[in-house]
Length: 167
Image (tube, rainbow, N blue to C red; front, top):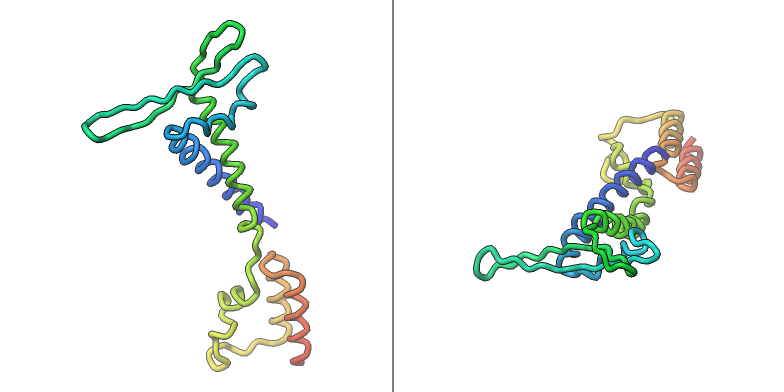
């Protein structure tokens, strides 16, 4: 369980990093409509987002795009520069979307065959190279693997039945 929580926290951090830097800051400059995702979060009842895209050329043939984002009050027409706040909110929205897409990968469990190979068992190990272990040791090992979340209950029960049949 701790491993799953750690993977989720790590995945959430990576997702928000990608959502902010790649989608919001990077792609948002080229595609300003991406900032509309932050509108419901940062805009009040009588406000709207206005995105102004800027093109800069520091040498011939090179173009850099940036965006300035304003909150415009509908009644007075007053503009407030809220670029950083809108980029952060849009990054959070897109980061959460990336996390939802990554969640199935984070929830996958390691198959028993992979765990067995990592611990020196499995088809790659020969009987001559692996030391003989008692049934008690084998049962204790698969119980430890199950309790640490590396194998499912079905895999645990299947392997336990195989060990008991060998006795």
